[in-house]
Length: 230
Image (cartoon, rainbow, N blue to C red):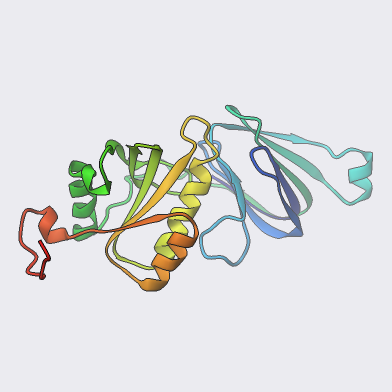
């Protein structure tokens, strides 16, 4: 992984257009080709990124860019689409590379891991017509708990024991990334948990994400002890 702290401006073009004005930022270039741009805030969410497979090319600035103080022009192009990330670097503050090696992957705690396994086995709990594609679908910003196919297309599922706003934000980032892939898009979101806080439900529904409350005991084939209407 290469870590670069630089003063830069960024423009993303393709399925959508986005621009970041000149500021000091962290640029991460991963071995799989992913490029992520971070600020010093916003938790772990990148300001913009390019998913792999992608190609990074470094070029000298043209005359106009050089007069504006640009030192290097980085162009990150997606291999499967026309999406392109252009990074104009005005000043390098830090540049280092590290060999991280293979990663053993995320190990979830007991209940969350069990919820994922049980929902994969009982995918119909998402609704009629759903089938499992895979668990732990890898993305450059982390694994999606469950990827399924529903009546209207692909569905990304984020699982939590207690669903709060952070979980909705996490799923939102996955959806932004997955919907850039023409082989998957459109991808809908499902936020599934044993309990979902009202604020999280409101945010999810505002973003078009469906909420599903899971009965862990029932999924294990046990009675939860909670009163039921039927």
